[in-house]
Structures are given as structure tokens and as C-alpha cells.
Image 1 (spheres, rainbow, N blue to C red):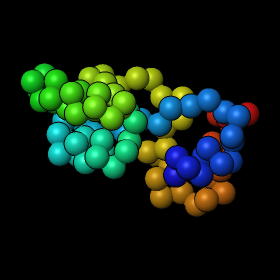
Image 2 (image 1 turned 60 degrees about the horizontal axis):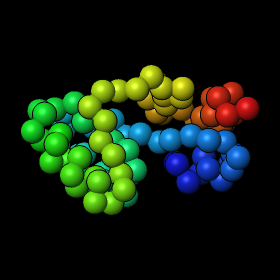
Image 3 (image 1 turned 120 degrees about the vertical axis):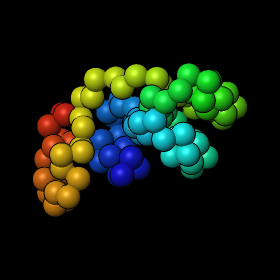
Image 4 (image 1 turned 45 degrees about the vertical axis):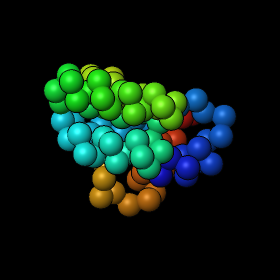
Length: 92
């Protein structure tokens, strides 16, 4: 999805952030998969270990959710045209 967004709007500046909540396993898997930024809201000691893992690859771990310019959760099951319209409205 991120690659598609970058291809559709190559001059748009944006960051993709995966919110893993308090699921340390999901956060670690996301970092291993190359996600550049994850949100982890679990225990501080676990967050520190995840941050060390992230730093080794140039990624980062946030402990709070930043305000979203585009949150596609509500549109998760939407058709492609709806998703394109929502993305276009933000990136234009």
C-alpha cells in the first residue's frame, strides 16, 4: 500500500506509521519486515528494547500515536476507488 501511494503521488511528502498498540511481537515483526516507524504503547522496558532493534536498521519506535493526516482504518474494506479518492484529497 505504501509503495502504491508513493507511486501515485511521487512528489508528496509523507511517512507511513504502523500502529502495533501494545503488541511487542507485531512491532518486532514490522521492524523485521522493514517498516520504518512503528507505534508501540506497551511497557517501557519493552519499548526500549524495540527502539534498540529499530535503531540498528535506521527505523524508529514511537510511544504515542501522532495525529494522523490520513487514517484508513475506517475505510479498510472500501473499494479501490474510494481509497484513491480519500488519498487524493489528502495529497492534493
